[in-house]
Image (cartoon, rainbow, N blue to C red; front, top):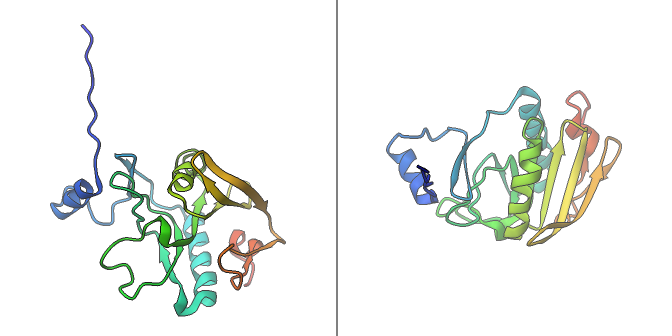
Length: 191
């Protein structure tokens, strides 16, 4: 006798109801990826320090004309709501209180990867590309590099460039923002 398993696909509304009813904690590390609730590990010490450096670096350069979002969800569609590490978003008066940002709001999305490298490269990057997010940076803590992905297409990003300590990079849509790769990767290097 063959048992056929059935899986339930969750939506953003389901996720919000689970949080509202206390089934999931609001600060629980959960991502909604293609209708599945995936529990992610809390950031390790190197991961958290890198996010803090990016926060400091971007905060100094973007002023009030850009919204800096740290580890907050983005709505791609009704079954896809990942939580990137850092996003630079087009400004909105309500600071995204009425609705979460969508792909069209993202000027730059950054994922910091150490233990999550395969997940970020194989699962999240293709989803970001198919959603049309124009530029994604993957801070690869394992290889001490920043991978810059741009020119999204349905199959993935058409362009990937890698940068290392000693390099300086700029987001495509924010030419005035300068990022010292060595500073992002090395917590002891001054900005």
